[in-house]
Image (cartoon, rainbow, N blue to C red; front, side):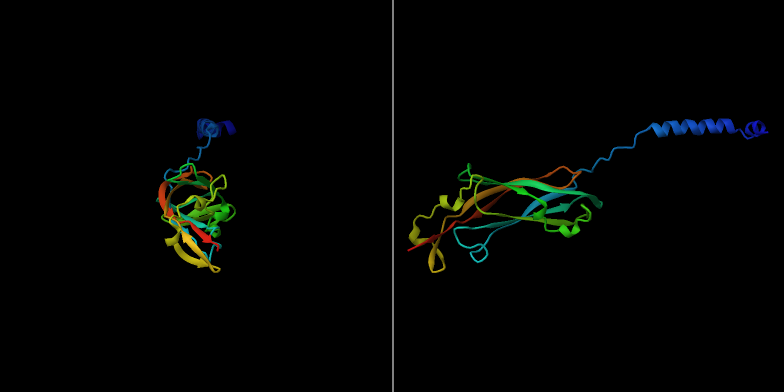
Amino acid sequence: MIDVLMKKFNIVPVLAIMLSLCSITCDEALPTYVAPKNVLSVHLETVEQLSDRLAPPPDHQMVRIRLMAQNTFDEVFFDTVNISGTMTISWVRRPLRVRNIRIEEKDFLDRGLIKNKKMMLLPGQQVGIQFYWDMKSDDSVYFPTEMNYIPAYNRNCGVYLGNTVICSNPEEMIIEGHLSLFKNLDSVHVEPTAFSIIGRNIIVP
């Protein structure tokens, strides 16, 4: 009876076709995920030399630096975070004076967006990275000690705890580097940008 039904309804060829399709599809590997290109852009937003009130005393100055990263992709991007990178500051007049600053997750200003180690960015959405530079080189040379304060008599630029503060000529620096936000995206190059700082020193009577 079963043989009659199989022949009547042509079950054997249909079954053979189904098994054949299964053998083809089951042997195929799933496609490898390829992250889209040009998802992020990064630019330098702020370089601010802190005042004596925020970074005392004048001979221990600090510079606040903020980067902004933007989702330039035309879709929502969602991935595991990997916030890392290096920013390099070099002194134009004294190119051997260089500081490399590592970027870590603690520098990320929008940590509230991270959920279970993943983050979603909408098209056009921006996030910030902020870190500080103590105006020292990798070998701990404090840049203002090598700046020009001559002639000192007309360099007066303030008073700190009753002592005169003198200021140097402005000195040009270049900052550039690379930044990563997501595990499956390549790091993004931060284009070289120039900024100036002024050394401050206390004249003790």
